[in-house]
Picture 1 (spheres, rainbow, N blue to C red):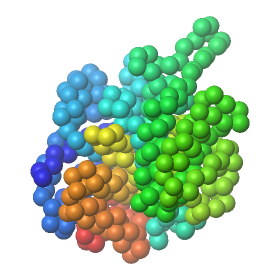
Picture 2 (spheres, one colour; picture 1 turned 180 degrees about the vertical axis):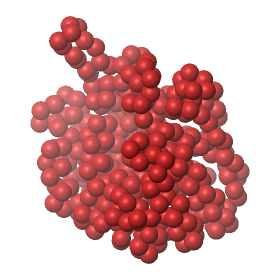
Picture 3 (cartoon, rainbow, N blue to C red; picture 1 turned 90 degrees about the horizontal axis):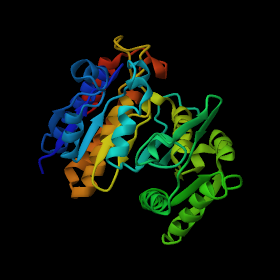
Length: 353
């Protein structure tokens, strides 16, 4: 097939790392014998505000609607002028608009990455559209309101269909890995909402007799991960819990700079690093592009599964192995304790490819 991939640079370090990732994807595809992709550049973030007055132009959303997959660079709406600073950021808007309900966030320790626990190799499957993030849980409105200046209220939404589809995603992923799913919840206190999440996950998991299922409260899970992260395989949880735990597991595995993710529905996928736009180091040429490289590899693997494309799957494998090879060779950016810049790290990955 001929694939078209959207590419959105974003803010902060985005314009530095996104082009590096595109170079790595092109090289991996060539090494795997796959056809080159057609890149579709699209504006987002500060550059889009300056050009069209909004961080996520309607033209960008319309173009994404016609694409199967894209790579989104980090962005930072805290730096946007009002009223854009107070609205849902471009990433959240895209996830919500295209119903990218599954946020898949691996945490894998690579040799040379200074992992707190070198045996860590797990994946957090985060429900992406409901739960405690009120601004993503409603068809219209933010999900937050203030009846008086001294009272603020937010609601959380859990639905059976939403829970079922993320539970299926987790169980299918576990089948391809080590066959173990851990459901993370707070059902002892939030009996109706988090309790339903746990119950429905158990119901779905019963349809996968080859998958072992356990569950933990969110507070206990944070402790378990610190003490015994390598024992976990696939962790499924709601939106906010998944956001918090994936930052924790990224650090256990070495660094947010190596924490990839994809956001997917049944029809579309978006590669996006777990980390933010790092405005404090933007423009200095020291940002770690590894997380977004690994995210792009995940996106190629997702496309490969949809189209039964072995060359794309091989390209995805090559990206991960090349990043690992660069780290093993001691090429590390400052967040990993090294002194290599973005270009030097990218060149090492390209050399490995």
